[in-house]
Image (cartoon, rainbow, N blue to C red; front, side):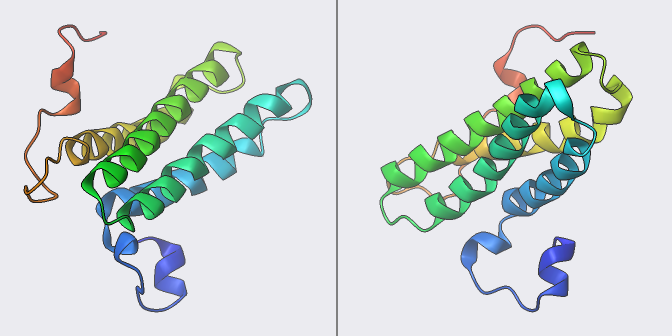
Length: 146
């Protein structure tokens, strides 16, 4: 459970119980701390990182509140896309020489974990359990980058 939820009492909403939501909150905190280093000409990159990180948790929460499987899946897919966008933004920050790959590694690990969970959550078919087994995110690609 995130430090925010621990500090602010008991969990009230179902989405707060999801591991992917908790990881998302951790990433929002990571992104906010990193954003403090993005000044001047990198303001737009900072804003993009903040927006995409927050979009992940907001879409998870909204999707989890939907009754229809199709609607829920659509919001989880949007959250997954925002997590991928956040990962790309971290890569841009490294490419621009603002921080090192090592500095963003914890964030990338959180994002990889979230994308994996969201990938599994989007293969739900009508009548199946929400945690239907799916192909792991990394297994979706034939090659890995060394």
